[in-house]
Amino acid sequence: MGDGSLTPLGRDFFDRPAHEVAPDLLGRILSHGPVSVRLTETEAYGLPGEDPASHTFRGLTPRNSVMFGPPGHLYVYFTYGMHFCANLVCLRPGLGSGVLLRAGEIVTGETMVRSRRENARPLVFRDLARGPARLAVALGLGREHNGLDCCSGDGIVRILEGEPATGVKSGPRTGVSTGAETPWRFWIDGDRTVSPYKPHVRRIRT
DNA sequence: CTCTAGATGTTCT
DNA sequence: GAACATCTAGAGA
Image (cartoon, rainbow, N blue to C red; front, side, top):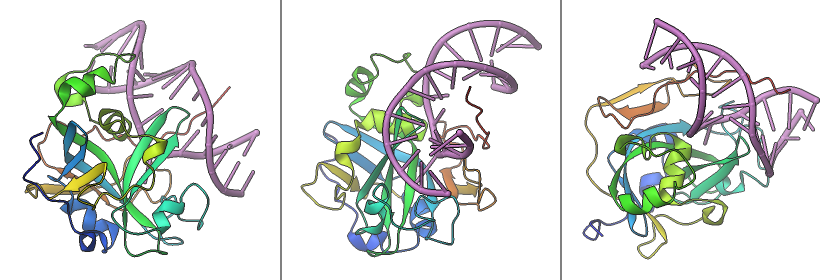
């Protein structure tokens, strides 16, 4: 599979504030079956009452309950009526923060990734996991993966040590309507799989 | 490359 | 009802 020599990140790795974990995740490998992706862009989301952009800002709900669970688990949510996005939970149970996985580069399983996009426009290689919803499609992540432990050696989805990135930059988060000034988006400078920055735009529905 | 608009279901107010 | 941690297609430069 190509990632056989890598071991999962320890649970302690995630028992830190999300804005410390997020840059350290760059260069790491997320693996699900034959597909593995090298993370190139992440965003941190903070604690209830402190970060208005976080899903946990208003406290525990059925949707965000996984974010209040143990660190190193996968929080998958459905948005815009058609997309899934994946996060890794940070800090100990009860606190509620995490890191959104925004983009990556396909390391193994490109054929499988392309087969998952049969109903979408074909993409050039660098776009296959460029953007959080496309990353989720590439790795085949959906509702059924919400809550999975990624630090377990025999888990279905695993976050592997890989090679920590150098040349990390940070800036404002993408597409958030509040807390947009907090520079908690992190990316590998110069990597072409990093998604283009998009400020928040209010949608008007007819 | 840029810009614009439309699709679509869940969650929370 | 409004907002939503987005993506795609199409037109234009």
